[in-house]
Image (cartoon, rainbow, N blue to C red):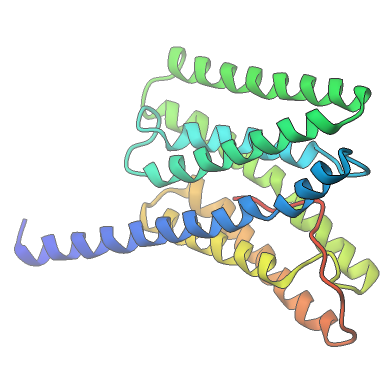
Length: 237
């Protein structure tokens, strides 16, 4: 390998890692966004009308994507594992708080769903190790991660539909929408630079949805000034 080729690959690696680090930092913004909701739950000692399902879905998504980023499954994309490990911890904490302050019926339901999440994840890990060898293992977990990420798009689609129906951006804070778009864009670039379609494709879709959210925000925020509130459903990559 010539010096020029070495410099090219070094620059290429730098930009791919920079995109991954940026995605990690922007994802952190999304992970902490539900904190005001859980402060309210703790203060009132009640889950009120809040739903715990988004955090269940997010935990399963983080666990599957975490497994996909592990070296035993995929090489060279450890930043996918780091961001989803942090995300999984946040979602687990949120779920535990929700269970503590939920009424008996919802408590039992959430505990059952949490057990189901860990059971599904355990099956995925077991099957991927015992049944598949590289590179089939990466394909198996990769397709599961894409399916999981696409299912998470129900959250921004719900918010987009709500904004269009109400002609209000009250439940779509600008900075949260911007962080969602930039995070998806960062991981889209990371996936492209790593030549990994399991990362670039779902995050490319997420970036498009992020653009739609920002366009809707500017369109509907012109008509009236809205008091911004945190949405009950959050977007995760």
